[in-house]
Length: 342
Image (cartoon, rainbow, N blue to C red; front, side, top):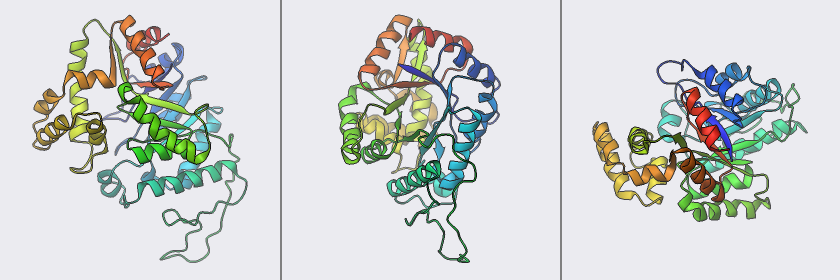
């Protein structure tokens, strides 16, 4: 099992110890370091800044939001970081949700699957650099010939030759159609709130994409976000995790269209989702966290003694996960997780 350090996105201020965490991840054998974005800090800059002090770990985005940048701009970021890191960059993408896409980026959210397919196609063209980049689709037309166009747009190839034509592209996906699209067109799946109990269901979704594309699982990665904590007091840790779960169920999406909430509903926690959502929307966040059952937290995290963690990691690996993205917040935790997962 490979380990990835998930730095996440920043809160009100930049994290104070990120450089130390990144250095520790490399020192203790982590495979990768990932950064995310929401509507504050971006995902690329922290990797360039803190990643410049590394030499081995992969540097990935988990995830950058497609609506934040045109496909060509995203490709420029990716090829630049891939060169600077010596071929260690992983581009993780996601569509986000309508509240962010339409409220923050001012772009329409409709047809996320079609937009993703076009976006990745353009990225692949840029990285291949075999011909000027063109796209006839309605979402990211290149050259642009719509309203306001001067008619002077010219198909272009990137001036800078990408280091790797096959730079890995991973997609953050939660629903069955999006997961199937991921295995069809991407090199890896960034899974949030993965539950090994449902591995057969996930594999069915993935197989749809593999069959359609003719690809296999051999080089496909499944990177699951998972809190891994080595502790003698698992009950206390699970209590600490519940507010974060409640936030994603009740606060990280619009009422009636919350993809994170749908994940937990598919897991069989529909009543919990309804209760958490109702309490969270009413501003009763502490009560919402208390509604989250221990069983749910146990399904999506690995918490316990070193031996218990080691055993659980094996179970996740057998379920098809190739990388665990963990959110350690101090050097001691990074060391403990690395040693437990050896």
